[in-house]
Length: 156
Figure: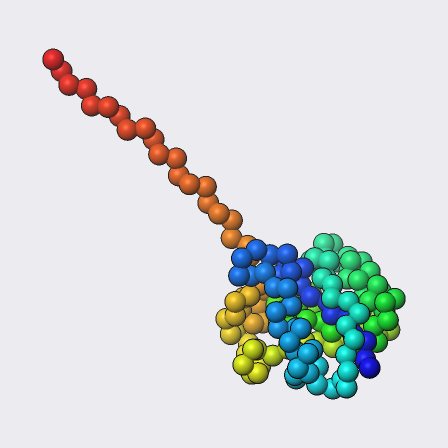
């Protein structure tokens, strides 16, 4: 049995509407042992956490903290979720610091597309364009205020 931890994108984990992801494809990939999970005989998921958010001022302490917690809980390998592998501009640095600080193997991706095919660079998905950043949250514009209609006055 292999004990794994998964780190996923905080933006997509806490997003709203169709951009929110709760592991819709990660969990079936583990259960069915497809593509990135097929190397394991049996899997025990020890944790499913977020990256902690985009690092400001090159601070990677949040993702290191999460990686160390997964290791503490028994993870033998950490998977960077497919959403992070495809969209995160910090992915390479995240992988580097996780390897260095945890000493665990860090694998990229957890699943393919639901149809079993690989995502292609430039392909639009419900979470953004592959190889680019996830689309920014769109703020709702406040409704325009209607000015009260002016009453017509008639001369008598």
